[in-house]
Structures are given as C-alpha cells and as structure tokens.
Length: 458
Image 1: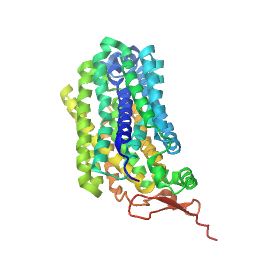
Image 2: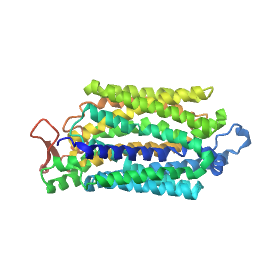
Image 3: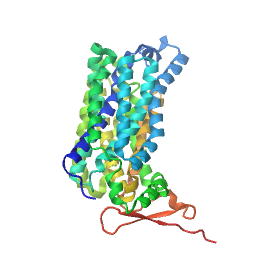
Image 4: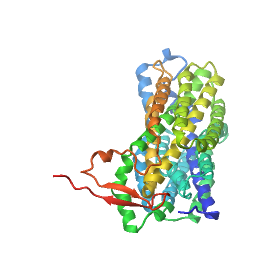
C-alpha cells in the first residue's frame, strides 16, 4: 500500500483529529462545574466538616454521583468491539459519522434542557457511545492513510493524542463561561460538529485502505476478518498487556473527574475559575508530553517499552503525594506531572497498538484499536467507583499511583511487537481452533492470511 497523498489525505487527518478533539471537549466540559449543580453538591461526601453529615447518607449519595460517571465507561466497553468490527466491515468513516451525530445530540440535550440529574445521566451514556465511535477509531483512521510508520506519522499521531489536553482546555473555557451562559454554553460546540460532518462526507468511503490493499480477494478478506482472526486479536497476549497498561495510565484521570472540583472546593475553597485554570495547566502539560514523546520514540526503535515503563512510573509517583498537597499550587504541580507521564505512556501504547495492527492483523485494523479502547473505557468504569474514596482515610489515590507503577513491569513483555505472530492464547488450543499464519512475499507489511486447519490427532 502506498501513502495516500494530496488533499484527501490531509482532509481525512484533519477531520479525524477534529472528531477526537470534539469528543474530548464534550467529555471534559462538565468536570469544573460538577460542584455547582445543586443535586451533585448535596450528594458528594467530600465536605470541610464531616461531623455535620451522616455517614450512611454520604455513602448512598457518593454512589449515585459515581454511578452517573460510571455509565460512560460501561457503555464504552460494550460498544467498542462493535464499533471496531463495524469499522472493519463498513469503513472508519461510517463509525466516525455516527459518533459526530451522537455529539450533536449531546450538545442539544445539555444546551436546551439544562443539567438536571436525568439529563446529566443521559449525556454520560451518550458520551460512552461517542467515545466508542471516535476515540481510537479516529486514531486508526489517521494511521490508515500511512503505509508504514514514519516521523510524519508519529508527529500527526502526537497531535491527535493532544486531544486529551483539550478535555482540560474545555474545562477551562466552560469554567469561565458557565457563569455567563449557564448550560447554553454547550451549544457552542454545534457549529464545529456540523463542519466535521461535512469534512467526513467529502472524503467518504465505505472501506479502509489497509483492508482493501492487503487482501488478495474479497472472499478471503471477509473470511479472515469475520472468523478466527477476530479471536486471535482478542486473545493476543501483547495486545492484552497494552490494553491493561492503558487502563492503569488513565485510571488517575478518570477517578479524579467526578470528585476533582468538589475536592478543590472543600480542601482549598477553589471555585470553577480556579479549578478551570488548573485544568488548563494540565492541558498544557499533556500537549507537551505528546509532542516530546513523538520526538523521543523514533530514536528508541525497539526499546520503546523502556520509555513506556518510565512514563508509567512518572504517572504513578505524583499520585502517591497529591493527597498531602498544602495548597492549590502544589496540587496543580502534582497533577500536571501525573498527566505528563500518563500522556507519554498512552502515546507509546498507541504506537505499540499500531505496530501490532500492521504486523499481524491488517484486515482487522478497527478491532485492534477497539481493543485498546476497551482498556481506555475500563478506566472510566473503575474510576467513578473509586472517586468517592479517592481522598479519604484509605487514600485510594495513592493505591492507584502504586498500581500504575506496578503495571510498568508488564512492559518488559512488550518487545518484538513487529513479529508476524506473537504469543496468543489461541495457540494453546491448536486442535480446537483454526491456526492462521501471515504470509508475505516481501519484507513489507503482511499481504494476506493463509488458513491452516490442523486435524485432531487420533
């Protein structure tokens, strides 16, 4: 496959990055204003004087606020594999368009109906669907226009991953504008959504470049992408480790989102404006980490797992200390450091996922990236469950930091990701499942799959 050139290539890249940024903005826009909702303020157990509240009421209320944010991860985990298989069957563009339409619905609900508990719950469910359709699918759509890894590809992917920062920038903007526009501020995202839909339609196609060029025939392509190859993707050991590390790298952020604004208000008496400023600084740190990682990784070549290990440790250490911050400045520095390490780790894991997809499963490209999104979504499923106890006597935030450091040890297994057949659980059952071997006629990307069915021994 040759690199796609010209306006088509860059328009597909621009619309993919735009969809990622929009998804991130809609996700992070609610974070600084959670403490301002009347129903949320009475439900959150974090107060400056705990003796004035009843412990049982705190537990029930904290579960309610956590359940609202938990729904995002639950929906995203359920829909991510479906979105990946749909992208392999009908093309990335179809899934991206569905995600953008869901984003428009989110904006209309928030902008016209307010922020009651029912509306917020509905929007968090829609956010899970939006993330499943755009988060890693858009990343795969960008990678799909490049035949092989290159410095340009790494830089573009780094810019795409900067979308994590826009979650914080959205918090900064919403925190400033919410006092003037209230919930109507979410209508500002509508024109951006419409422009992105038009951009996707201009370059619309119902297939993917890799799946089209890597296959030797339509029947073979459909057979491999819908059969045992899917199970090999799901059971790929190294892809499982990438997914697990991605979950731990994002767990700190996902657990902070439901409780960060309330913790800042109760511990430092910080309002939406101060909280938004800290989120903006975290966004700057996240962008810097993405761009620096894009320059470092190409020089490491086959030692990217070392950089991933160091990044996970950098993300974990600040979480061990943030609960002891004496003021907002120290807390902000700790969070910025954590986000820098977490972003660098996520970028490295994303590039590792891309390597696995190109080397082993070119015809199930969408599903490989969707499996990475399952790990991402799992953090948004676990994070809200832990949010209520994040800064309590148990200090769950410290446990998350320790888990992040511990997960860095798994990166030792993430070597030789460009091998055509890595360790796979399905290989433990050779008599029960078809064995697929990737055959190449050159030293380039895999060109086709060859099916070899082993008969059971007598």
